[in-house]
Image (cartoon, rainbow, N blue to C red):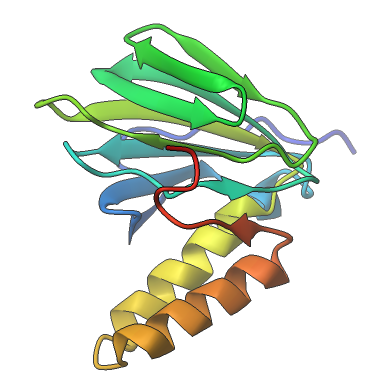
Length: 159
């Protein structure tokens, strides 16, 4: 039997609050046998993930609306509407922030899947453990990152 075609409209997908923005898992690794996941990221001004690295994932971004500033160990790139950014497997430290005054929307594809599971677990933890201290939250989020092969760095690491 051949694999079915999967269709997803704008009302479908798993919606999450993470990294100061709203993410929607358009298609998860569970639906692609772990081959890839696609995540729509709505990033308000000032939001975006801190520097991090993931050696086992390729991560691509296509800017649908607005602009975000990507930083890596190799430099800075302002990605505007219709720009494409590829973060290859290798573990290079990177992150992005919306430094503009308008919201940005990105389409992120991760190969193989796995970051979608990380995002779901962090969002679930944040929703159900809001009374934890900041230290407890930081420790738990770091343990989730490690579980999924991620490494976190301080916010000013790439400055």
